[in-house]
Image (cartoon, rainbow, N blue to C red; front, side, top):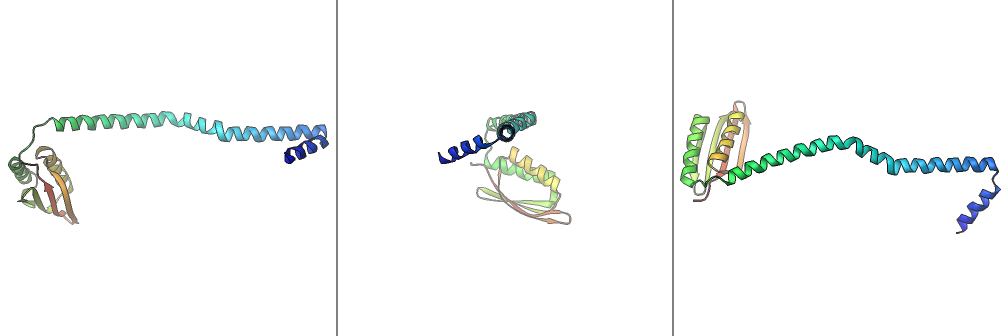
Length: 159
């Protein structure tokens, strides 16, 4: 309250021209605050909205494709463990030849790799996941001069 009274006393002592200049300076400060706190963020949002909307539309399309893929996978009949092992063995022989060896142990299978090209490994894993319905539990891979060496442990489907 005392501060307001002090401001009023100072205002009264100012000349008319000084009052106009102080009022103008106050208006400029208020306009600057209005711009910084209200208008600039709103304009920035309006400028970036189309690009953000496009990104969100693309994400929505990607999610719809993944959902359709998941529904397609869920609709497929289950694969028995023996069938999964046969599919794994034949796909290994077909795609990786002598560079991979399959060792089944219970509900898991270990694939030992030797100098496998990255692209071939990626293709084989995609095929194994979709056709044999296996899940990669563990992968220990080392990048060698001729490709990947190591082992991959797969979870076989239940019997």
